[in-house]
Structure formats: structure tokens, C-alpha cells
Length: 440
View 1 (tube, rainbow, N blue to C red):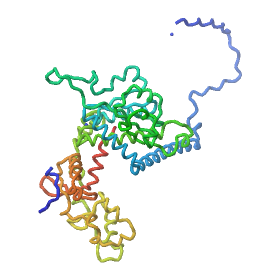
View 2 (view 1 turned 90 degrees about the vertical axis):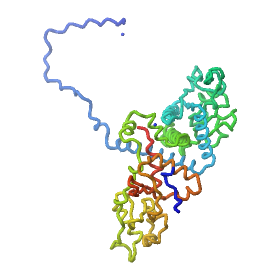
View 3 (view 1 turned 60 degrees about the vertical axis):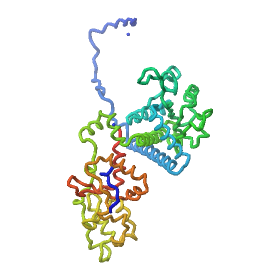
View 4 (view 1 turned 30 degrees about the horizontal axis):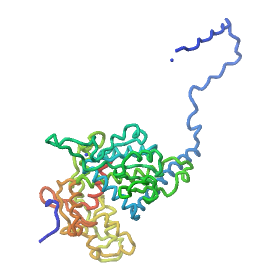
């Protein structure tokens, strides 16, 4: 009996007087030669900006972009391998998710350029129904501290349905601060007026909580460090300490945090995003096409070319990996069939490029590379990509699901007639659903 999982089973005054003009002579002096006319327009920009300065400007732009790329890669390496960075990110996801789930909100703050990044993060969080508010650190101490809610405070008490008993929210608001130095005076002054029981998250250049001055005097159990260092200082890179690379890394890390929290809170973040983003190109697109379905992204099996023995391939009587690569080069989708019921996905074909593999017979390749139709996992064409992604994530929580829905799995898309007419790589479901969530 086939025990493979199927998905089916499962948003101006007093001006001085003008002096009297002198009388003009009745006759004007004779002018021997006419006065040449003055130019009416400024010199053309091309006369000022020569090729050398244009080249220098382009070189500068490329240098700034390359430096930012290096910084983001540096931060990726840190989050990928450093336990402190990993623990901080996971703790931040847990704290924000718990705060929102229990009725609290996220307070984001920063000054200067970091404050601009914080405002963008506030907007991103809110578009995922992660209730967030930007708090200017200077305005906060002039009355805006009132936006911070505390458990048991008078501004957060409300009547229950019997209008007699008073209750309070279950969770204090959490704070997310942006400061590259970790010692911004305005933020330090702000924290003096915020009780330490509020969770404090800080995106900063510091790579260990013990070195961040903003955590001083607060219980470390309620502090979360999100490291966003840069490998080379902006002064060394550009000759000026203007926040550029540092704000880029802070923005990237906070975007990663927003997406991770959205996925923790909601089964289909894309649906939540579109609900709160009905305007602009994103809203128009969503209303026009509606949710994407698996049938929309599937590659039709009938359109996948079948690999043939090539006359220039290595001397082998059977179909080889080289024959598959040659067929893939001609395949619009990148998929290749080796028979009517056997298929190789693009990501698996990309792994066949090593010279020693070119003469491998196809039948000798691993079963994860060449997948028979009987091993495709059935998914209805009418199901949305978001639903498929959630099903995959839920199934992968079990050992059985991790076995059937491992990396490289081919999803067979079942049409209205009950026939498997399309195929999708399992990685495409995850990646497409992620890339669908983007700001216009």
C-alpha cells in the first residue's frame, strides 16, 4: 500500500525707497562695433564633465555596491556559523512572535540614519500584521513614552464582557533599537525611562551581548543581541564615516527578522501581506491574478524533452549524463526526461557538470537524480502555492515527512482530470512563496 503523503489529505514691509535714476542723455554715443551677444544658456554639461570624471563616478558607484555586497556576505557567514548570532536571531523571532501573539506590539527606535531604517522596519512589520510603532528617542521623553504599554498599567486595562471585572494584556511591549555603535546617547537616555521588564532587542555592530553598553543595568535574560557588523569601516572604505554599509546590513537583517516572524505567526504570510497591501502595483496584481496555484507554476510533462543519444557524446552504447546535459541546454524549463515516466529536475542536472560524471550511464545515477513517476509526490493543481508550502513545512516536522519531502523531491501536479500532467521541484515552492512577498 502506498503510504506517501499527498496534499489532498491535508495581506515682505518696510522696503527702502528705490533711488531716483539719473537722467539719460538725449543722444547715445556712437558704438563703433556691435557688442557680441551673451550666451543665453549655460555650457553643456558634457563640456564640464569629461570622460575621466564620468569614469570616476561610475567606479565609485561600483565600489560602494561591492562593499555593501561584501558586508552582507560577511553577515551571512556570521549568522550561518556563529552560535551567538544564531541564538540572538532565534530569540528575537521568539520574543516578537510571543509579544504579538499575546496582544503586545513592537516598539522600534533609532536616531539619524538608523532611525530611518527603523521606520522602514516598522512599515514592513505592520504590512505583515506584526503590530509595530516607531518611537523617536527625543520625542519619547517629551510625552511619547505613553505609547509603550505595560502589563497592569492603567492605559491598558479594559472591561471584559460583563463590564465589571478588569483584565490586562498578557505581554509587555518589546523594544527593537537600531544603533551601529551600541552606545547612542539618545537611546541610552530613553532606556532610563523604560522598565527593564520590557524585552530589549538591539541591532548593532557588537557581536556579543556583554560588550553592548545599552544592555548595562538590565537583566541579560531580557536582552537580545542581533549582530550586524561590517568587515571594513566606512571611513576606510569611502574616506567618510557616512552611514552606508552599516545601514545596509541593519536593513537586511531586520528584513530577515520580519519575514521569519511572519512565518512563525501565520501559516500563509503572503495572504496576510496582500490583505494589508491592497494599493499599488502589488495590490493591483493580487486583485488581477489572485493567489498563485500549483498548476500556474508547474512545468507540463508533455513539454519536457526526452534525452537522446548524441552523436558527439562519449563512446557509450547507453544514454549518459552528457546526453542529459545536452538535452537540458535545449530545454526551455531545464527539465529533462530520460523516458516517458522518468524525469530529472533542473537542480539535479546542475550537479552533473563534473568531468568524471559525463560518461556515467543514466541508469547508474542516484535515484534522487533520476526520479521515476511512481516516486513523484502528488499535489493538486488547484491548491495555492502558500497552501503547498505550509503542507510541506508541516509534513517535515515528522520523520516520515522529512523522508518523503526531502530536498530534490519532485512534486507531481494532479490536474482536474486526476492525471499527473505537471511537475514542480519542491525547492521552487519554498523559494517562490518567499520571493512573492516583496515591497513595491
